[in-house]
Length: 337
Image (tube, rainbow, N blue to C red; front, side):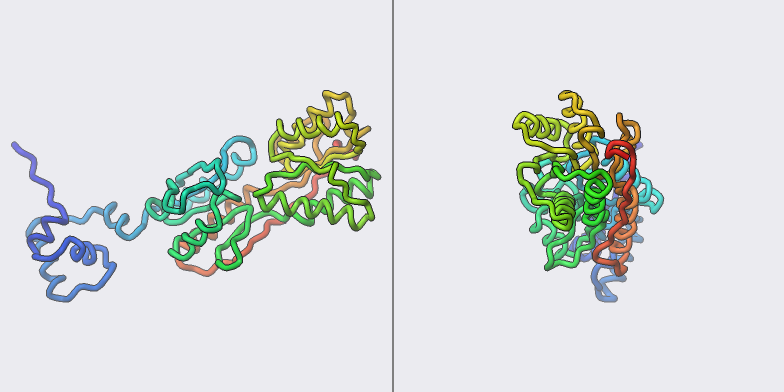
């Protein structure tokens, strides 16, 4: 016994004497059709026993019950915390999560080349510098919902962003080194030049020096790039150049771990000879030797808030343009306390 041939939208269009596009508009309610045409299409559907596929309807309406997440990486505690919270909150809201990794920063060849976007998700969360300003403008002017994390939108588009407080937290941790521990030759290990968080943390570092009348010394600023190896090599170079320093402020905990290793290699005691402080408060921070003084940046909350805002955008609700989650200075032993 042969299977009954499946009926398609093409068969309905042929029976009703209209185009496939007209049948699609009628089924998906994306545009009005005349009463006569609607009745003809419905009669043809009934005669052919045609049942519209719900997945096809969702595709036609750009409803996928899926949100996208564009990241530069997924390695390490930082991304683990962020992704876990985004996935959990998306799932609780009835959405799947589709993740894409763009390690080349702004080198995507236009928004249409993204593996995730309007073609397969209802909206997207974009991390830091994973998309260019032009990509963001493309999404915005095509009314595709996007929420940014760890960066703000170009001024000409009203795209919401979520991040942690960076400037005052950096200002306060450097103040702590100066006021409590009398450190005045403080190395700053900057993050990636394309990351807004990194630039803001450097501004906090410079502002703390300025308010304490400590001259800014570019020889004490080096690359950390949010990486252990890069920070390790930078501290090694500073030591080999015999540049005097009594503290290190690393732009994130990964860089702090690299700095800690470099100082240990040179038998420089933390915090007796050099204080070490950082930013993020990854789960490993209290278990380092010595335990790391750092800024607790609640990136789990950032991820959860980003999902909340994105779902509001998908449902055409108003949202705040900028959301800043407070940071907290966590004092441990590496600074000298």
